[in-house]
Image 1 (cartoon, rainbow, N blue to C red):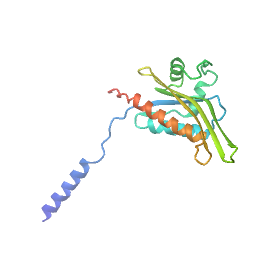
Image 2: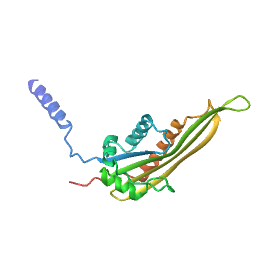
Image 3: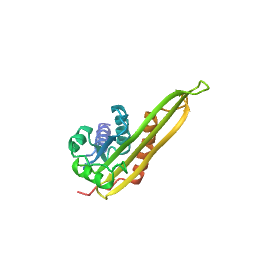
Image 4: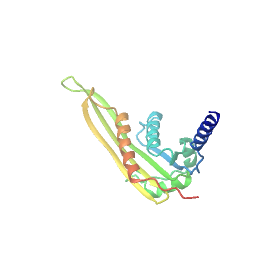
Length: 193
């Protein structure tokens, strides 16, 4: 009986030691920079935070790490590339410059041209809300020099009770764009070390 108990204890110890977590080689997370250019004057910290959260969810652990906004702003302070006013969004050369300056493997740039909402009363006495959102979103991956561009355009007039705010529209539509970017920018294989 003592022999059986001793064998049982040894089996349990051997089995439990065999399934303990093993250390694995970690790989470097690739940095992602989020750049927001607000030409509308309507973007606040809450909206930037919501956009960063969406990027973190789609380009987050374990393959990517979001570069803090303070680091991005400090790297680009006074050296931000000028944008062509005929095409108010960041082109590939500008995103490449940002990727090298920050440094970041992936750059997601959000150019907010206009974001407005107005509430008024119709001649029938009902409250109407007009929402207009015009945002250009670009992404650039340094490794394969892949550049993506999407536009967010929304112009709608509805009853105030049934309408979304410009903030909600910008957040939801941005989420759709980032999901498409994630499909078009598959995870790169980490190099074997």
